[in-house]
Image (cartoon, rainbow over all chains, first blue to last red; front, top):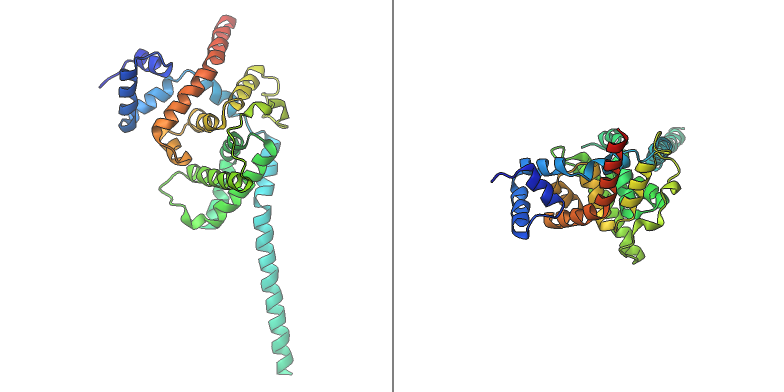
Length: 99
Length: 171
């Protein structure tokens, strides 16, 4: 089944009759190319994308990059400290028993 | 996948995760917290990611799951609209957008959509996931994705149409 751009635009605008619209919707579920065509024709998608893609700003991103991994890094560091402490204690115990 | 690989991939996905989180929460502070939780969870669950799938899609599924749990724990699930969030409350818009009234107006209108529509708009219009991918991320039928998009389009169309005509006049 082929659909003209005009028909697909009418579908996107909700101007197509129910039966035909349902048919396009059904076809899109199995036809990736049709889905891509519909997405590309969508008159609202592009202005929305252009506006929204600017979010988040640089400062928010920088803060996120720092904070998103802080807990992870500090958890890693504390594990390292624990390992180090365990080695020191073990060393002290072994050293003590050798004397 | 190893946690280190996930940590390497995450910075590139942060903008997408942040916008999606904003579409769920409607609040900048909650968004930042949600993004942080998502990153940590992604690192913890690194071994569950299959490299055949979309990394961003996987992160967004985690993000949504954390948000739903948060909502459940607060027992405050309401279909609140974003209307309360003023674009000017987003402290740090990307360069160029501060003075771009058109972009600000569009963001405001997207924010004013009900949250169910907002997240679909973010995934399909902005992040360009296919309808079926968006359905998987949101765990809803593809028909629901389409009907939510249709409703959003109705709400956003008038403004986008008017602005396009104005732009054409200017040229």
